[in-house]
Image (cartoon, rainbow, N blue to C red):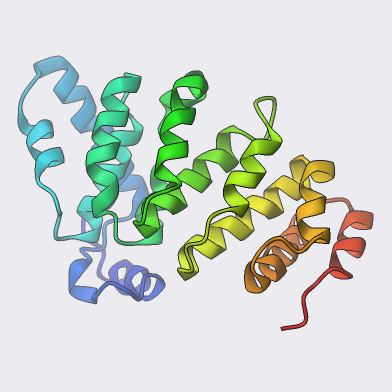
Length: 223
């Protein structure tokens, strides 16, 4: 399944990993392979998949991506969270972190929330990024609470990939929960770089009203 030009393209997007850590398998192929593995495991109950999931850390980026797709495809909440908690400490890049999106979480938000509250306090960069992404994906609609804005605002990890996710979260909150999110921008509760990035991403979003964008631009920090 290797695609050499794609390998070079992909490695350029993830500069913190050396090129030799990439095989170059395209995402659709990895997703299809993950589906095949899950189906075979369900039908045959072989130990192969469990063996792969337990072989951490993986050497190749592509293995981590495959791992993320397998975990995301788990249909049992407890099994999914168990596999996730084993995997999270070994995630070493933003792409694998962002590929993690377990479908089972949509139906188990009450059970998910305590784990998010734990993960967001982690010292591991990509565990925190994942926690914020889960709040963004699952708790900005009907299950929204202003408590979650405060949780994200309280994140003090200074890593670029955490700050970017915090900015993304607040930009999305400005699109979906404008009245609740706006005071955090007006009062400049976020770190200056993150504050400005949140405004930038909100202004780039088609979901934010034009009049809101115009006002948000007046709130930028002068760095």
